[in-house]
Length: 382
Image (tube, rainbow, N blue to C red; front, side):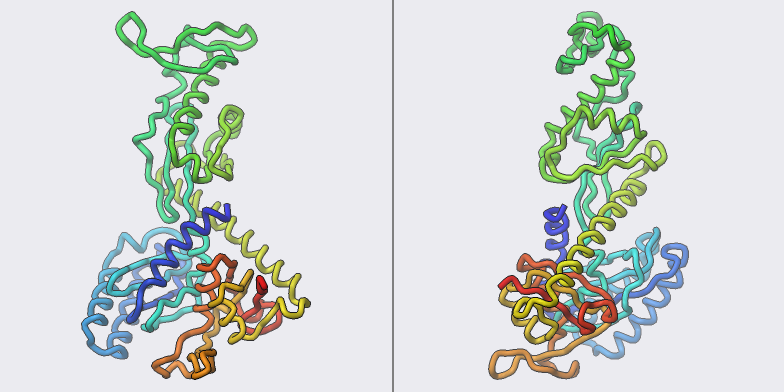
């Protein structure tokens, strides 16, 4: 699972890291989600006016604020269930992330995006295949981290009833389809009957095999984890037939029949979020275990920043509710600075990005929950 979280989250972080100022970050608490979308949009509109007054009228700023205004008016985008949003806008990109948690609120234009308000949501961006294994109309979806779309080019059998009872295969034969001599209608080639099973039961076995064959022939099934959705018995029967080579398989049986793409997205998002929270707990456990190791653990911001730039961070936890500004001194080392300093940068966000983009693990938490009681705690690789 780690590979999938990394690939999608890293894609987002790389896109953000490639931008240079001005970069607008806005994070808002959104109590009630889409039910109160008008309230959230009104708040964002007021924030946009404030940002405009504070930031001047440079062409790049005008472009960014025009994009922000478009988001304010896009009512459809604000629907759904969420507890917050984080918006990243530059001249080149516009990203709108719905968050399943209320973020620390922020509205700022700097040379870099602020990532920590959406850090958990970005870490939970992962791609999945989702199979609705209904006996009547099986469907395969691709979840891209934010929404699910049906994969109509993957040919699945239409239903278990599409196989004739006279054409059931025995349990040891490979299913295949050909046209009969009478009328050209497709039917299963008779390979013998198993007296221990009824034709109906054997047809289910054939049906499951045909779905398995379709997935095995689909290249992305070898790369992405799989969510299998359906009746508990049917899901179990399918997984007795199919071995997934793309990594993790998650069974889901508490969803209504024939779920919509939106419901599929919700299922996949919840699974990805649970995986991210487990990974986050593992990172925190690693840091707790290493706190007593001299030379391995540090909670000095400048020391951790230098290690992150060098790719030496194995695991780090950073405060989501603090900003620490630094600048690079004449000795090429970070020094404390004021946020008004035009050469200053926010160190915690840079540590977070550098760690993840250089194959370390990084998470964010309130400062009060960080081991050691400071704004950062990190374990070095060497």
